[in-house]
Image 1 (cartoon, rainbow, N blue to C red):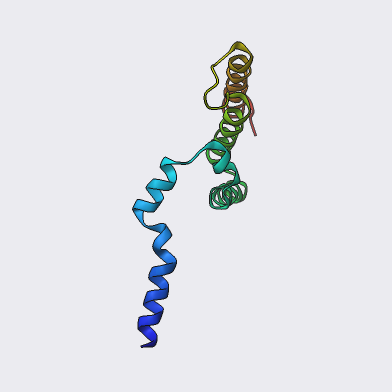
Image 2 (image 1 turned 45 degrees about the vertical axis):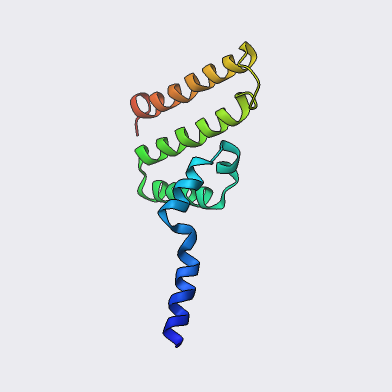
Length: 112
């Protein structure tokens, strides 16, 4: 009896991690919910810790690019239903160029 309760509790605990639930979560994921989701933030923190400890330029630049693009989309793209305008497109373009320039600087110009 005790093992069956343990199995039921384990199944109940792991239900949110079923493939269908994860795919549904990813399908309805927005930038705002991604930034505020503790699982995604926790994954970024674990990757950042690994990158700092192992001194991995690739992982650090990937994290920088992912976080920068999330923030860039969050703050420069218009709300749903609004049209694109020059005032939202130009900051997005120059922000993308700045991200790319920093990654190029990190890989090709900066030496250790």
